[in-house]
Amino acid sequence: MRFGLDKYRHVFYAAWRYKYRAAMGEPNVTLKAIAAREGLTARFAQHIWSMINAPSLGYPTAEMVARWRKLPAPTADRVASEKAARDGCEDLEKYVTGWPGWLFGRGDAASGGAGDESPLILTEAAIKTEPSHHFVFNVGGRPGRGGRSPVGPQKGIPVYRRRESPRRRASRQ
Image (cartoon, rainbow, N blue to C red):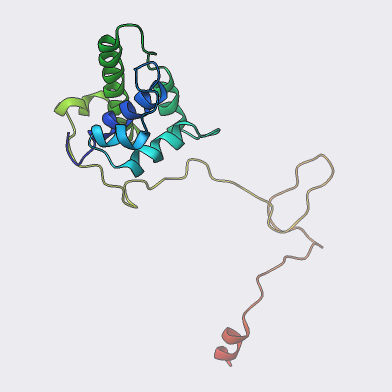
């Protein structure tokens, strides 16, 4: 995987290993030590650990944390437990690094090099929205009780216009 994105599987595994450190036979190991074994910085591992344990998260972080929490707990067979956790962390890494492609409509066709492989670059043009509904509102009048008021200025009701700035008024004179 390019650009260091493969570190996600390692940091998720490090967090899992730290959570189950006693069950894995290392009750006194620190997150920093596990991160170093996985080739990660302690700061990155601590950031992920604090995020996983945060009380309220928004999407997509909440979804990622929910998936991390579903990783299997270790069993008596530590080797099999470690393999299952690493496999789960690899799947989690694919989710974390792949959801932006879904956000921009690439879908499954772009996964694994079978489709749109253009780089995902966020620009103003890429996230530009178009209006889907035009609103009509009453400019000059006040609506009556419970009924609809006609659109546009009404007789006898003053139409408020934007005040002209003194600078603009002076430039016309």
